[in-house]
Image 1 (tube, rainbow, N blue to C red):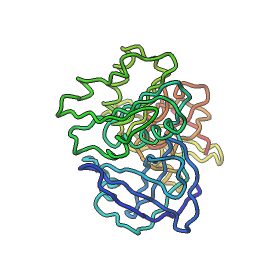
Image 2: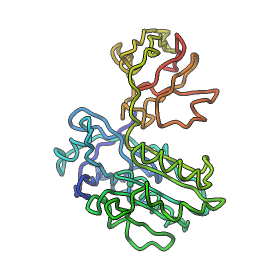
Image 3: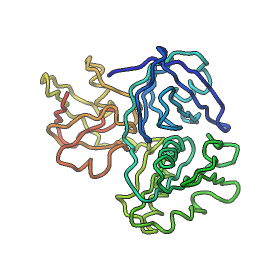
Length: 321
């Protein structure tokens, strides 16, 4: 995978629990173009790789801007960035890729919670540039928690942004945005935030008449993993390129078995959120446990499996590696 060396050119506090990083190329060249909804993989100094949405204006090529919330359940990534990263530090990043793109629409409703604001803020900037009507609704517990508030509340010509605070009576369970109540025929809805937040908003939106195919989501935390089940039996994974096969026991992921046997696996989030390790399935029945693929993709004739979290319903699985 092609990578880019960048330097941390700016660090700023965003609310009480997040920071913003401004990244510039070490060689001074422009960064690759990107579209709203895109993210990059960031190789951190503690040996971890994590993915973060790009935010701000997609038109800028001189720097990338990302926001990172300090997660209470951090496995090292957000804690490292919030507590150890320093100005001038070099990082290695991937080229942008987009699993959460904007789709053409006459009006767009954007609803975020927590650091899920970052891709939707980039979408607002893009929609403003394109002259598409939009509204951006950002839920936080308290106003002091809001990240990128100055960007969100700037005067837009084609839309507006607002901060909705639970302690002021505007929680997503008790105060839905007015824009959600009257879906237009050609409108689109984008949701980004914790899994429970998005599940609730999806259910509410569909109750209010939003068609499922006009609701787009991206999670910033994995769904709570199911407890180990007796159905999680061992199966055989085979590489199509070499014919090499190994058993995958109930307590190991496909990715871990492949890595233990010297097979290079492109891991990033390791929770089924980012799509970095999606690999075509050539035979066998996948047991999909990722949140990055839609139900249609998981049931398509040509499927991909997330090696970091998914398993096999069949005794053997052949993958395109």
